[in-house]
Length: 288
Length: 334
Image (cartoon, rainbow over all chains, first blue to last red; front, side, top):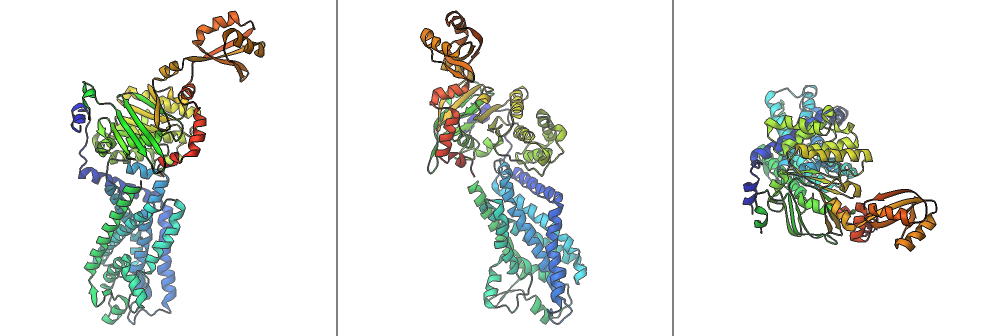
């Protein structure tokens, strides 16, 4: 039965549905995200507004009452990596959730009926979301000097890598949510319900030291926390702070009595990313 | 499977359905369909909304799995050789599936990459299909600036980009004005000049089915008639004759008494159905006894065919069928 077509339809080439084809599909979906990002200037500008308000309005406004330890670290300096993280959070999660619009306008179907796996399509989408969110955050990264963070190339590269990884995870989360959301008008409430709490419970806006137990538990189960802490740690490595100040402002993550190493945090983020991507693939493959 | 019957020298049928059944929780959308469509045919799948057209096409496109039975496209089995089927079909859905932020050409480029079209020939192929549907000049414009008809044409061009063996069009002209509908059909008819392709189209516009080589009339999940449009109409047997007379009531009475025909006034004309209308006209002039001003003889339409096979008109079938079961909504998959 399966031998017949090749015998009778010799003129048609069936390209090997191999990895190369899958990679090509993922690549073009990544490209589409970049094209759309480049065309959507309004979105680019508007999603920079919130982090800049956090940094220069909230940060500066609260500086007078928040004594960031007792060293030379100002509150805005402390806030800087957290604000980078919130910028990535919203942009990337929105990238994933934008699949709701792709469904609404039918383009999702064009992707899902193609002779490629759902995994390749969603991987391309995650890479696209990660790239655009990281590109966007470069604007904020360029402001480092204004808040007393030195322009160290090694730190910049590390931050870019960490932001990309975090953005990948959050785009995948956005995709998982998008598989559930059937209507465009439900997308924004979903952001409020899921994404905003992730920001507040991640330690992006306050140090994880000396929190009440309930808040410690919530921050520890939030995968965002493990994406924010490495960024803060990379920034604090560049700051001239005494160990006591650092222990207050950048205490890291402690499970019981175990200080979780930054490397483990990064691995955790990778694991969660893959799990979320797999969940999104399962949901899209089943529901469309 | 009995592939022997079809081996011969020729290629396998473009579409081959055997005992196809699709049951949803509450409704049986497709109730046993057998069908062969030959390569190169333009095949029309005709029926009211909710008759099972969309479900059948979705099974053929690997979007929905059949409850039982088999379906093959260009020799590949839709259930077991999904990607091979997908690689060799073009799809134009009822609902638009374009990215309206991208340009026409970007939409095609995206599609070519997803379908693994050979890069060396891709640009030439894009130009070819864009010219075919008259959108080459507009290729650099964002799709959101296109009219409804242009978008549909772009979708047809995109469906052809990867040189599919079968092009599926699910209600390609729905929601378009008559002029645009006519132009879409012109593109489809001209396709055969440049492409070796089978076209499988669903429609519930009876007049559009006239463009097809063969049509299947489907009602309540079954094929009730399957033939060329001409033969289907010939099988009905009777033509529709309309005459304009000096005295319509006298004419109706004369038709009943002298020719045993039931006539009625429709749209200001006396109308009746008769076998071989053209040769009946001379008898009419000789024997009616009422002065006749004008005569029109019409071959039966596919609406008459549908009526003859289902006992209901297509619009009545839609009203009752569409209201009674949620099939249409289900079949659209949303």
